[in-house]
Length: 321
Image (tube, rainbow, N blue to C red; front, side):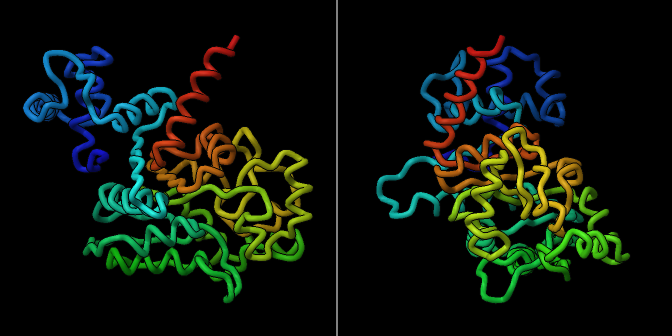
């Protein structure tokens, strides 16, 4: 069973102190906690068997993998849902873990940016209810037509409802028919103000989409499968909040992106905590693109995806000049 989010600081403090050889004051600085807290966490790590006289080699395998991924990818935190042969849909375990992680990250008074899609809505649907004060949940991009499931406004308002928070929807379409219309709509005071405030969020919850016929931007009608194929040939690697990104995690220079009503990537990167959740193993390449672009600080994935990421990081390190 994976380590609970509330216990992760104990594990991280032990990892930095025993595996990396940092002093207690250095651990405190890196984790933004007091030195007294570090000492307490290290004591708990010894008492609970997380470490013995040196770094334990009998730690929960997935949690050691999470710490190694944090080191390899330069992420603040990684959580890994363990493989469970008795679960019909392993993605459900990832969503359950992500919902718990999300609630641990939310603080009173936070402003939270929320993207859309099946992953985000599943997290919202699984999430426990909480009564947090002065929390605002903000939609990160324009909306879709009524027939489409997991719409941005649905994701935003369901999470707001679970947190007993204020929800702010984006009263604009996700994609407009022309670039001129999109420029004009972005210039409208209400839309301009909402877009400009995205970077002030404290936390972001999102996933990354694929660039194939199963992509949510294709299924919702924002792009045809033929248009997506052309974008893929032009370098498309993933989808973030309705925007197409390339393999470096930059916005692709394309008409679709110029017609999208969504927070720009610079605003998203300005958000301090960016929690990305990836359920499907088919999203490996899009996930690499998002990581390359610095769009993620906190990550929740399954064990198989985690190992693929670590193997890839190791291979990339060997091939570096």
